[in-house]
Image: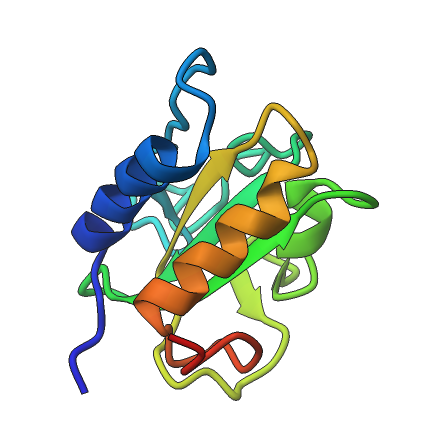
Length: 146
């Protein structure tokens, strides 16, 4: 099984904008990759920055492995912010290092990228589109519905 990459995700994001969004709306943008395990050569080794990218926004998040293969696509829309949703998957240990809250990942998370949606109602549709097209191995709902 070929696992889609970050590059394919960006292509699909542009395609979604052309096919399904009003052309007067600004195109969606994707954050830079957020490294769950940054490797600094200092006393702050592996310490996370303070906040997730777009932590207080609605949107879609993409969890990727070390090879930037898409492991999972999720959303924060009507009742939560991106920080709250990502906090259900990842936490910090006593030293500020990333701690996975479950170990059932098929691809081990390494990065997170975020697509903020200015309108909360857009996140579910974008999430469903990306899951349908990408078929991420760690998503269960929405797979194989093409």
